[in-house]
Image (cartoon, rainbow, N blue to C red; front, side):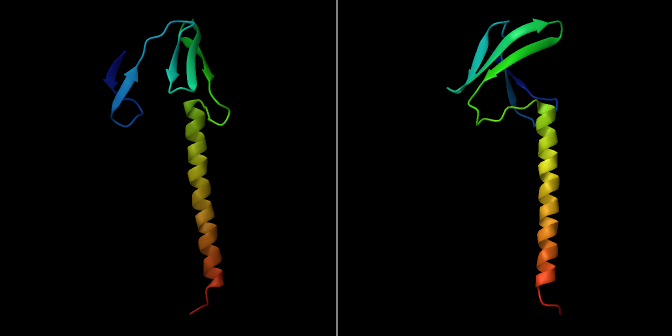
Length: 91
């Protein structure tokens, strides 16, 4: 185990790096286990054992969800602003 400085796609800060072989795992807290199921070439299959209420996404899916949430908040805010303008007495 060692810590490196993150440089790609993350805010600057330490990144914990662990080395695992196939059929080995790591624990995150008491409730989340991340297991290396197999390694074939450059592809690593992992399994994640976590409670159902803990969302788990591939990073590209997570980022897409975040962008959609930002767009939805902006749209909702615009709708509220428009409604408030219609409700306020005209000057």
